[in-house]
Image (tube, rainbow, N blue to C red):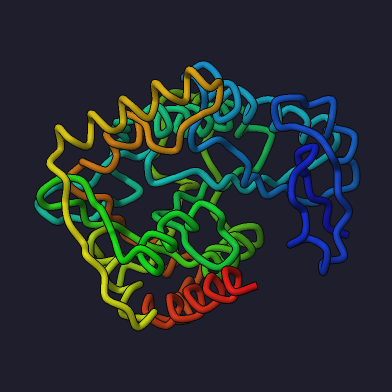
Length: 313
């Protein structure tokens, strides 16, 4: 039996075809989900905030709630936790082109990245009692991701694609299907975090980067490839960094006034203007036999077709 924690009022249509039990609650409210952990062998923690009304809210959900989830797992007999973190928790990669490795020290540059790293540290505190494996995916894409709708609409309908900086950063990508396969593999045989209660720990133990490292692609080129797959032309251009920061500040201020978090904000502009976000999946290949099933262009073909079908009803 699979149990899924869903927010009250969330769109659960994608779960309708699955034989999964739904638990309505919130990661920030352990009492709403903790009893449902009884009888579970493993927990896959994919929840979190990518943007929020304040840094306090971001840290509450992405950091301290991780520790509370781990405590709930221990209280109800769960012994295995897979935490989907983010490449942002590690920080940007070397601008000279060296991909990040799990053994590198972390240096996040955004509130989001810092909050995800602190979530990892909360789990590490419980690593003596709970088996925890951390996955740090790069840019996740695939059908059904509503965060991609503005990007797809801009490219396929308005023929525009905007990046920030000259050049915009190189990125690591992973399709959601490959990420799911890696999550399942990690649950079965993933390395576990070391507790930091005994002094120094081995950097990277229990952590895996998740990406297709056969190629790295700039965000501007990603848009061009979507357009090519869609069979359309696109005007792709790069905004100067100061313009990007101004737009991020304006969008963030509007979000604050409306009381709703803005997807475009200073935090995201900081990430968008980093030199590179590339990582190596060598450890996942070696330990978990990870191997992306299809190429970026092959996956994009299905993804774009699904979005076009969605728009055409």
